[in-house]
Length: 238
Image (cartoon, rainbow, N blue to C red; front, side, top):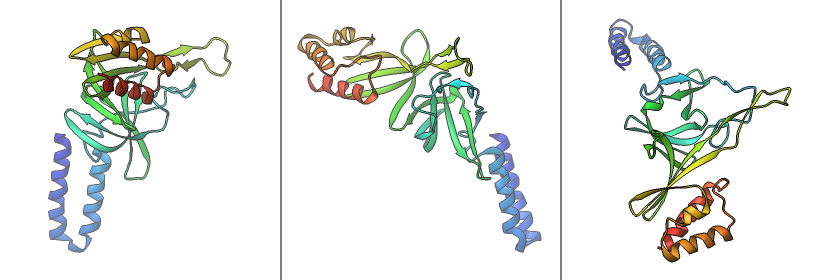
């Protein structure tokens, strides 16, 4: 950041020189210098600051991302500063956030945002926050809330070795998740319909079981929209 500010200071210093010595050429020269600063240091040094992304999985079946390989609209919070109107993707195998941006030259670049500085993000309308919920330390958890009930979902993928494929040696697994439910101030882990329903006392637990059975919900395959409806249903019967 100090280097960035120093370059900008030089920009304004040279602007003064150009104004004094060559008023007619000022616009061209100052624009070139300003564009150099942006090409070198990015539009926001706190945001565009990470490791360039290279495709390490060109010869692997499937992809490591939360939704798909295309970047999606979203936002991110880095070291407490919020950034809107981004194109991002969430790599759930490596657990990092990828930022896509257009350079001044017109090319598309992708960088891995520093995980230690990434507090949370929203991607395609879904909210993720970095927090510690168990012995595994800080992780990104998707947050789904409704009137005092909050579900936390941590998404993962594995890289599997293939033994009978002559073209590919590895493939990414389907995504899988770990769940916690915060209810009445207590955090409960769950993985199936039985231990999810047991969180709620009396008739609420019975109605939760009936709802999940009727809608054929399985937490290994449940979609985000189905989970959202389930949480909202549980909230409505409290």
